[in-house]
Structure formats: structure tokens, C-alpha cells
Length: 62
Image (cartoon, rainbow, N blue to C red):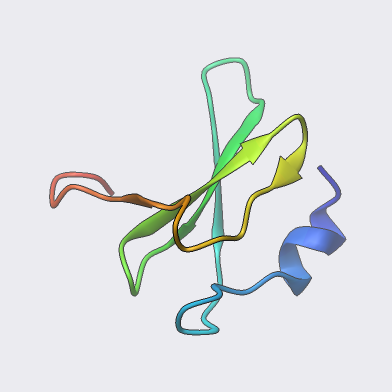
């Protein structure tokens, strides 16, 4: 995933910045909004920026 694209994307709910999360193999898996505690999935290299598709983060998730 292009880092320039990640810098341009914002949370669709609050318009805040997103953080990229990677798996153990360093593949991008989701974009996280720390303010709303939502994680948007990345499927086949494409971020799914729909609030209905977002996962709510548990309090222990950092």
C-alpha cells in the first residue's frame, strides 16, 4: 500500500488521521482511528472505509 495514499486518507466518521496496522509478516491489515477506536479493514490491498465495516477496538487494544 502506497504511503502517500495512507497520508491522504482520514477517518470517515471524525475526519481524523489514521494509523496503519500490519500483521507479523508486515502486510497491511487495517487502518485505525485512535480517536473513535475504530479499525477499517484492508482487503486485497484496498482500504474499506465504510463505518459499517469498521471493527470497534477493545479497551486493551493499543
